[in-house]
Amino acid sequence: MYTSTDDTIVAISSAPGGASRGIVRMSGPAAVAIADGLCRLAPGSTLACAAGFTVHAGEIVFSDVHHAPVDVYLFRAPRSYTRQDLVELHTIGSPPLLDLIVERCLAAGARSALPGEFTARAFLAGALSLGEAEAVAATIHARSDVQLRAAQRMRTSHVAEDIAAWQDELAQLRSLVEADIDFAEEPIDFITPTELAARVGTLRARLLAILTATRAGERIDVLPRVLLMGLPNAGKSTLLNRLSGINRAIASAVAGTTRDLLTAPARFGDVEALLIDSAGWDDAPDELVSAATGQSETAARQADVVCLVVDAASPPEPAALAKLLAQAAAPPLVIANKCDLLAAGQRRPERLPVPELATAEFVWVSALTGEGMDALSHAVERRLASESHAGDEVTTALSARQRAALGEAAEALARCVATAEQADDLLDIAELIAVDLCEAQDALAELTGAVTTEDLLGRIFASFCIGK
Image (tube, rainbow, N blue to C red; front, side, top):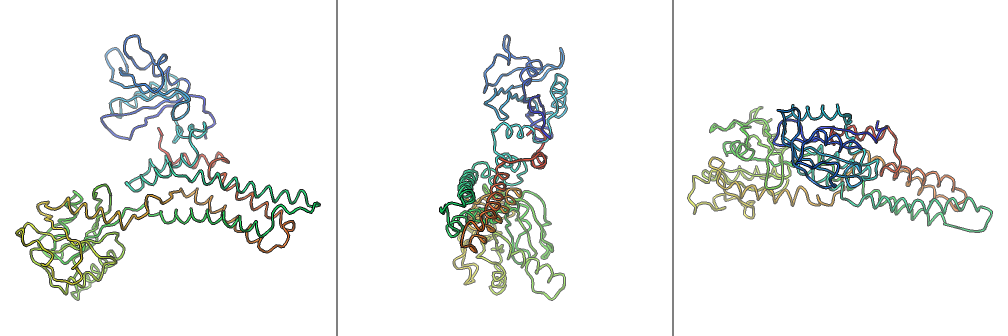
């Protein structure tokens, strides 16, 4: 897929669509010369004579009368992302203009970059490990703050260092086992089956610990859920619209307007979440009402944070509140809505005389006027940080390919332990043990990119967008 790495490639590197700034990126031996021919810098200034890590203001010249402003970012080999001469042309983010710049670069001798080819060149030049390259892809595809943080952890984690240490341990164990085969005629015990099983078992436990942490972090692909629950006409739909900034729900004074679960993305401080508006809880013997209430109960058990919305101006019956509280898996955050209808002295938890709410956290808001929204946002953010994402910063994030490679290594080590535990003499099982240790080494080598195939690289970098 990437058979040629010594030519010059070009692609639009900024996001699709119009913007105040657009970026065209070139990498390769002719990148500087092509940019020099396309751009007009200050009198007497050329990119050919410029040092790396410099920015040059000028114009992209299309004709005597057509030109566009440009900032040229120059990176010299080997101190660049691709370890080649690399140029970025930062100009007006007009898609037709960027396309025209790429056409001029192609006419001057560059070729269009394949998906992920810039990062592939960085990997092939040794600037990135395969795991770091996959972290770049995860960053590109991140759709939430949580996913972005996980991708950043993939790039900065110490997993690669751990794997290198495991490979050294496997190499040492293999050398001892193979020495036992080579010196079978000598009365020398390089390692006993018991010692081998213990050392391999310890190593396998470390691999499984990484896999367990990865499985615990698989919810990074899902936004945390914040549920608004309450009795009919408590103002949940108005609150959903206010918090999300979208008129997602029909807000009406008529009780029971919402029947299905309505969702909208919302931001609480620095945390992005999925806000859910549920039907008002009602125990009326009606099939439609029962179905809507059942949905609300299920959502309450699955939500990361449950917000109990109550009409503070017209407090509900304690018995009804108690039934609602029974649906939540954890103590809810109480949102006392419609506080604009109350005097300051009336905003007290005592307005809701329910024992279960004696120690609850209250936030007084008005979904209609926006009063108290900042306090509510901070309260939900704290709950998401403490309940939904405890340990988020230490969770190891790996791709499916990396988890599969770790799994293969762990399985090979498990076979090795099982074989060693059943033997009295290592020489009887040495060849089987050597094969299992070799398979574990190969799996770890594929994980880090020490062993690759064209098919593997094609599958990984094909997930990139062009220009990265």
